[in-house]
Image (cartoon, rainbow, N blue to C red; front, side, top):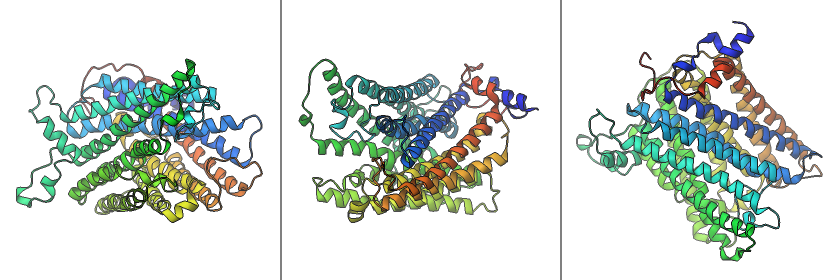
Length: 542
């Protein structure tokens, strides 16, 4: 096939959108949209990298800080949530061997998450509402800086994403607990208890001869436990959004509500408790679960220490509810016992839970050696390396003494946040995409292995390099939410910018490779209605 035919119809014309089931189309819509939002996030990140090297005359500081507000939220909700939701709405029915409870609800989840992300990003882009993603009180309600009407649209977009998130949560738990017509009846409450971990003691402390079988598989349990944190996070974010919206609507109507009615420290604890359910909750649980799924699918082996892995996921869930205070170690008014217990001790415990997931995944892969270094395997190893670097970086900054030095510097967002998200999380997601690509497309063949190799090395070195140079600047005292007009840290920002450019090139190579694999007609075909109305995940002949 010539270049034009491949561009239009995909590699060797193997991808046929008309052959996809509704579930395959649903999962692919999430993934394609998540990839596009990742591209938007990467582009915004590059603009900010350039701005940190030398401020752009036509790009004022208000626009810079509005990007700084939307950038992480688009990455979390528009990209990561979309890819994860699409994958899990497909994989939970796949592992449970029964249809998704509601494909219609799955499509509404897709529309609301994608639409809500666009609404808050576009509102932010146009109006420069910039309280930063942490929304510290009373900044989002400071109408001497921001227009309450523009802020209302921003909050509305977040609220739409949260409604989509709640639909995802409901669909996942209904799929786990319901019995499809014609299937053997299973007790829904028992399935829910097994999935969320409230029956874990049945298989851990009882003698082997008296242990009960777990009703759901380990991958489904991992999804369910991460979804518990997804639910709690959505409720906290929604409540906080409503609170801010009350102030905004009152301001639009001409009333000025007192900021002092809200205790800023209590608000900060409440908000971080919810927001940290993403960073130290669902992300770590979903990632550990995804590592287990990938390790078993790549190796073809049973998971090593599966019962311990199941227990560790439950412990991680409990830890995620008690770990938020490491974000308030430098707040003078924060009680000391919360700093020590929640901020230091419980946070350090994550080294054990995440270390167990790391160890179990590697041993499972090791047991199947020799393994061919496929794209899913090398991206999985890249993801493990990313968290192997980012988690200790997080533990370091969760020391009260070191936090006085590192707090609010480029160290926080470099070696910890960006390495965790760009290398740890994103490479794990890339591994899943490469693994599921032939399954979701009924056998489409990747266009270029050379591009996939470039994607891997450029993303890995770019991600780690950018995090490292940002960290070096942080150790020198560079704050993360400050523009340095005199070029005080320019050399670090140039080096970080070069690594950022490498990351962006890696994404372009990946995007081009995927488009050439499925073709432009194939991309548009994913968004057309499915021709079959089957509830099966895959076509009958697959």
